[in-house]
Image (tube, rainbow, N blue to C red; front, side):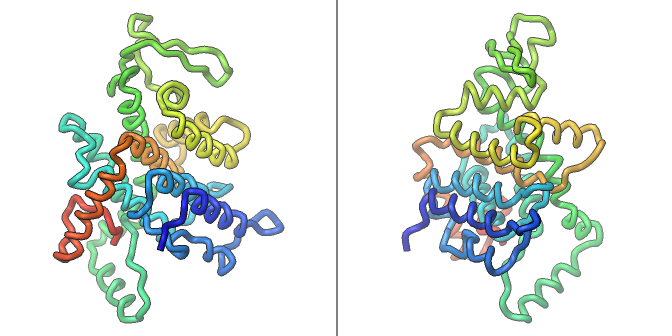
Length: 315
């Protein structure tokens, strides 16, 4: 059976969002909405090409974070995150060199936090009872941590996004924020902000997540990625039309960092942005990497052993 195209995936996600809207501006989920889920429509994430997988990241970001910062995580999200984790971080990926081990470890931790409460769908009551029995045997603090995994993700997703951006923008800024070559971004007021390696102290280092997002979007990302980033920004702007999407992400990051509040529902959305940026590092090697990752997963399925470095399938 041929896999749905990128356009098909985008439409399914948009149709789901439209079907959830009630006449009074609220949100309702039921049979009329669940028929648009990706897995229910034959989407197999490990068979998607690069364009379709990126469409799933954008589409499921819309499904994931709704107005009012309400979020609903379902098997579609678990499947997407686990397959992206296998592609980017699995034992065959070799995307991160040894000197970037800390970034890779942070990436792994974010994905494990996103997937921590994933459970295999059950049909029989005996299967449900077995899952419940295993869950009850978990140590008390481990059980509580699992229940708070989305808060953990919400905090860790921001340093991950910053690291992914600095990796992508390495010709302009180093991992410690030092400016490698000069660049200019427009600030919130639309005025140019110059960063340069020989400038004043405050101009020789970039510590602004917002400016890194703008730099990447305007001067680093390739045209196909810019189109997707525009779609992602349009979704974020719907959540708060009073400010630019990157300014809003920056505000979320600062509020979380300074302890004034925690946005426990935004972690998956910020993670999706990092995944989108990272997937564009594969370039023309995506198909080869997809087949290598899939072959590894198939070998593990045959042996019945899932290594600590595996992500897919999600359970």
